[in-house]
Length: 271
Ligand SMILES: [Zn+2]
View (cartoon, rainbow, N blue to C red):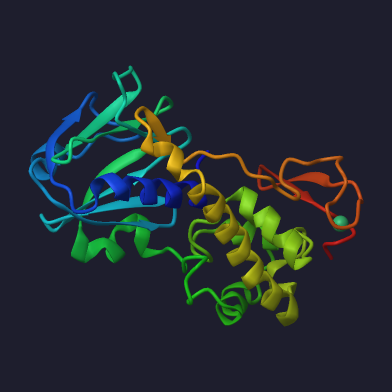
């Protein structure tokens, strides 16, 4: 499943083809993904110039000179294909640019989404209105976490997955950040002290920034025809490493289930 770094990498890759380009042909090849495509999607995007790209949480943003932004989510299995030789059954949306490029949204499981949102109203769009600060933004600091977690009895692991606390953090990066900060994922969020929160903020920013950097270093591959944007392999310190030695202290990594999701942690390093 694509997490924030994959979405960021995808957006940066798409920008190379789309930023400043005009969309000369837009084609939908089915009615929608998790929900129907906007009825006016083709009409609004055809002939539009792309004025910029961006990301909010795990959503990609393609801004246009029509005042509307195409907002996409990759769901469980979505990806963008660049200049494919031919289209397959899972290629659901095709954008062709005046620069001669063809970008194709491919989503076999169709848990993704595509929406059109007025750019001026993006912050109020329902999926965005309640989101907490971006992990890499200045608004995520120890003071924000302290206020947001105060008195909360839910575990720190589950609170960090709550998009209202921090936007776009997924299971992998929450596990990794808690290891780096030395915080037990089973601890009640309201019981995590100030020094631990002060360690947690840079831990979150670093794990996300490092993953984006890893993704960025793969982008050159997408300059080839028939490329795919967004997926890359990364090395993790705790994620999916049950029974293997902790990278810091060699204690075997444990796996537990919290809120129906796996958590991996080191019982020695995380307290
Ligand atoms: Zn350890």
